[in-house]
Image (cartoon, rainbow, N blue to C red):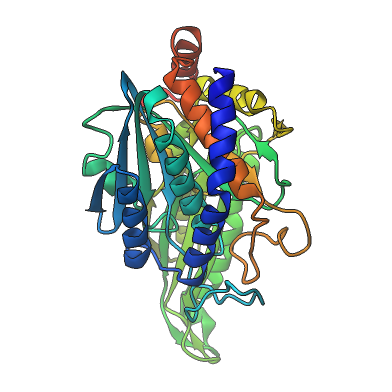
Length: 417
């Protein structure tokens, strides 16, 4: 990347940093839940229109897409931010704390949105130097039920056709200026389990005349964990968790049914496909042994997010070229969490990086917590990395060897996608 472009990126980020931090605080004070991000979307659209971008609104209900066309011909890259908040009470004592009872940005999506708006400002200032197009995508409902897939269904990857995608996620376990980056599947396939154990109810003093669904459900929970410890290759990453169990009527009544809700997480697509059969095998054995039956539904949710090696290399090079002392931490532990940027990663070479935002006791609080906050000095860091990675990509850095290696890696590791 040309040194003059690097200098321009740094200068433009410094110019817009305070404005972007202010936007983040505005969004933090007015959080909105998934598919209800109406004020957030309106604010984003207003900011993009001020830059002269081509703006679409109402995509997948509240999604927004801004298109910046460069002065020169070239490919189109998509940058994504999620906009939704969580149903959590904000307990921070800061001037920009949430004003909405029981709703807060506890996962940093306000920062994601602000950083992407700020990046759009920076890249708009470089329009004359851009060899291609940039789509700025602001997505609803990442926390569930998911806004990426419906936005894709409504055509955000087309006209012009998107060739690559980029995203970030704030991470309080890393310091500002530190970027965590991995390749391959960095998040898990996340599937939902709805299971009902069906027995025969009766009096608590006459258990021999019943089939105790509560007792059977306990056996089921223990037995299903044996899949992980004894039926699956121990080198595989997976989690099977039941987070909700409902059953019973009163202390002296044996329950006739128990409803259980859980989550199944895998990083391998092959294991993901195998797991329903293994679960059925165990359920058949346990319930029949005690005279019970069951009803099972496994609903596929977000697929694993795959970071393309070629795109990761572009990002890493961009961080180094900025010459700002930022550090790329490649000692990255993949997460078993779900992330619906994964839908983009299954269509085009993509990368999501972790942006360090934790510097003290306040900002090192984990996500999905009532006290979650970020060190806002990370916001201009995110803008610089986004902008420089885009410029690197549009200069053709993913052509040839890197692109071929990235596509080969993705195909070989996950056949049939």
